[in-house]
Image (cartoon, rainbow, N blue to C red):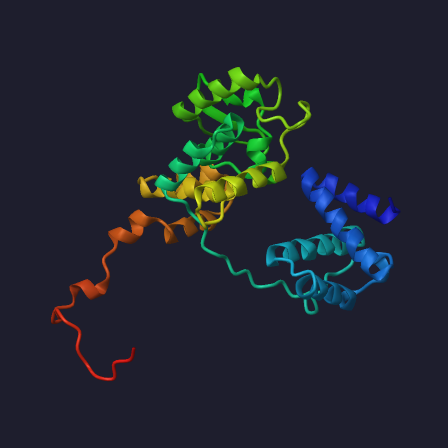
Length: 291
């Protein structure tokens, strides 16, 4: 490890960044340095611009990934190298948020019923019933399930913020069946090695197999189930602030995007066309008809 990379890791640790972010940022800086075969302290804004365009045009990386790469380099130059960031040359990209993908209640029900693997069924039920992020559920320990208070303890959410979410009675019943079969001792969902939790990739593979089995074209992932959890709560009348706390969102604006996909909200609002006293037609008529 180079002195500069070690220094950057120490700066990240002193600011209490998560181990995942530290690993991601240092990997990005190593790739940037390797691309030009020079130390980052010998590279400037034009090099950053060329590399980001390479990631975008040749590697076809998503905008979210590109933004992470930019953030890693900005941290390196401003915090570790103590330089002024290149705001004019490396402008922050405009974020275009997509509407979240949401499965209907019927689709979620079909998914859980089609999941014959007890471990996968319990894990998917955790995602949907509690709205956890992918790694939040994988990081759960047996002791995080509090059946007396009927809550799940999320020890380290995004940004290392702990929170508590509701423990569904149906989920508790399923977890008890799973526990009697698997008998996990530490991690609730251990991987092949009992002293390590299940890897995210294993969850993604299981999701793709189940989606194909059901013949549903919509994407399926832990985050889709998290979106479905939030949207279905909103449909049931839960207020946005409560949903924000359950999801662990810092900003209420992030939670508010579920208003755009809530069926209850959409169906409760009448179109202004319905109030117009227009003439009702029973048969189609008019010229210039084309086949």
